Length: 218
Ligand SMILES: [Zn+2]
Image 1: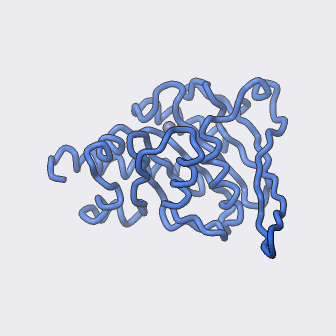
Image 2 (image 1 turned 135 degrees about the horizontal axis):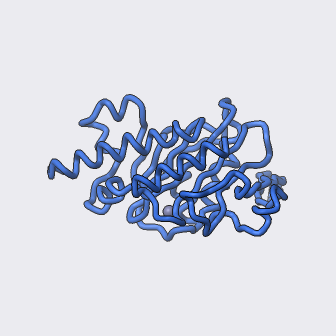
Image 3 (image 1 turned 45 degrees about the vertical axis):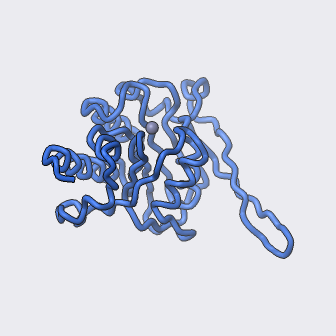
């Protein structure tokens, strides 16, 4: 599956959805307490499976005044000699925030893809809430549920991670209400059970955004 993620990023690069060092992807099997994430600062069009970072999800119980809650933290695990010298993607708060909950989902694998597709970003820049374009395009709404946009938030921030979590309506059982969310002035985050399935949500939304912008009616 890591090889497939490399293919997805190579394709995203060819489509101009990312420049060389942009874009990040993570993958988790539901019964594992770790996930894999793309490294930071590596050219994504030539990414190799042995460059991925392996991240453990640590969970501890935090007790307050009559309340108990889980505290989560992530920790790098040894994976390969090559990945040892690399850092995890700067967007790890986004992937960690989602993957720690997605692990409980009934499906066996969850993949999160973050890229910067031209027309999705252009549509948000033009003031379009991506969740509204589905109304006129049933072919999109049939296969892809689009969340309301995340507004202006800094890249690689906890705020970006928290807003994406909220907009995707991820619950504590690992279910999401939406397949994809746009981040204004930045990009999109898509989730599904395989790299190509997540990619297809982006492809579908990108295609419709291109049509909407070409029509000039929005
Ligand atoms: Zn980004």
